[in-house]
Image (cartoon, rainbow, N blue to C red):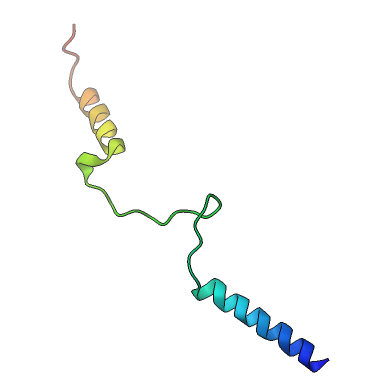
Length: 63
């Protein structure tokens, strides 16, 4: 009986070590690692916000 418990304990430790230090799984259920920051002139959200701010601060020239 002690050998069964030792085997279960060793297997549990091995699985925990694999989860902690093993290869990183990728797939649709795992979040992607954060990408490197991009330059502001390449960021579409930044450019959109900049355009909105520019339109709000400038008086309408169409009229």
